[in-house]
Image (cartoon, rainbow, N blue to C red; front, side, top):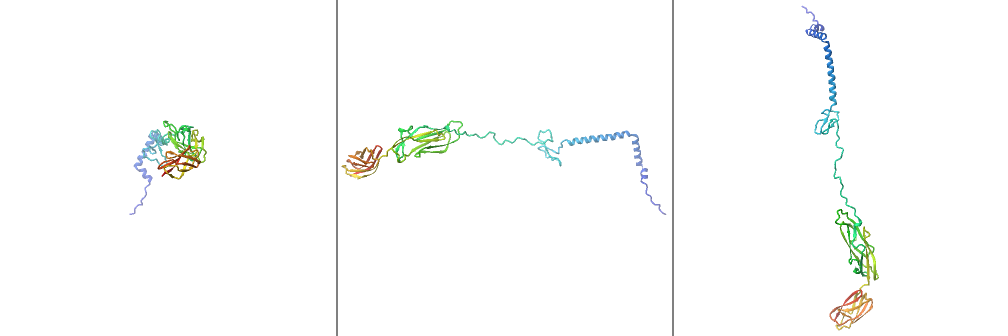
Length: 322
């Protein structure tokens, strides 16, 4: 028996004969025929809903996202391609970037250090300003103070800078003192800072130049202090002839009975007023020259000084009685 060939059923016939198709077709017919207006309203509502949803998404997109705002304590990181922003505490807008305070920090006191006032030269004073200091001595010798021709009777000048009781003392002042004669010595001569309120003592010394003739020299020297150059003092000098000097006697001894002729050699004998052997005056004496005197010894004993006295002083040498 031969089999009939199998025929492939038609798809459309199968679908159309299916009960599912029949039910769906019946529903389509019911909905399209029974509710046409409801279907339109339904579709319109869906469109409105979609529009409202789009507006809501747009508004949310414009609002600040917590993912891209960072507070000082937040550890959140910004989304890719979105620049980070920083919100300071108390800020009303999360999208405003705060750059920090514009004023610089305080680095120290606003007032400067105390400035020491500049020294005023007029506050540099000299005791006995303009006073005269008198010295007396022989040519080539160290002179001594001459009370008869000195306003102070002292060889010291005192200088003072400022008032120690001042509430605003000035800084130290450079000072110096000088004389217009190189034979006038000043100690100290200055060149260092003198502190405010400090008193300075300057010692004066005079060495009379050799060969200077005897006589009286008024205001021969001037001592000037700086910076107050008006503080000048003057020096008066009296040069007296050199006193006598005894270099030798001959003979150096003689009998106790006296009567020995003694030649005294030295200098400065001019104007000699006396010659004595010990405490006893010579029997006689004669000034032969400025460098020699001849005297006769009186009676005596032991070793005594033979003294020559002139208006300018006394000099002596020893003589022994035998």
